Amino acid sequence: QVQLVESGGGLVQAGGSLRLSCAASGRSFSGYVMGWFRQAPGKEREFVAAISRNGDNTYYVDSVKGRFTISRDNTKNTSYLQMNSLKPEDTAVYYCAARTGIFILSKTASYPYWGQGTQVTVSS
Image 1: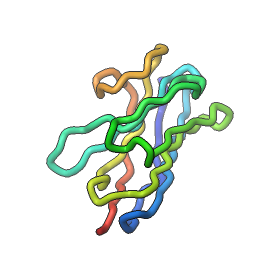
Image 2: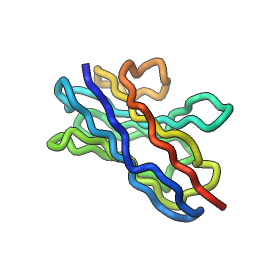
Image 3: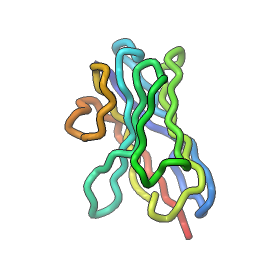
Image 4: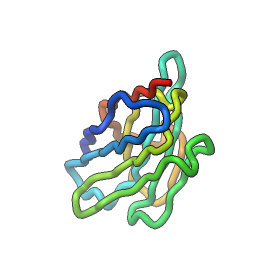
């Protein structure tokens, strides 16, 4: 198993930036595809981005392409989500997630391991 802890959330004005971190412990971090999801009040949890085990491949939801960047440092057992040009509609609790296997997937049900989430609030 792997345990995940997110950090880096907060309150930021529209147009600002935040970098979220997801620290992993447990089994070998490099064996997991990592994903970021978010859930706004009253809405379902949605996919944001994911990255392959070695970091060579990434995948984003259309609404964040060009603004968010997912990355990972396997030497530090950490995944990151750099969020630029933030918009009020990006306000949500952000979760990191992990799955074994080689495929980058976007469904929440594909990820068995989850962090507790970190709040991101973007004011207009």
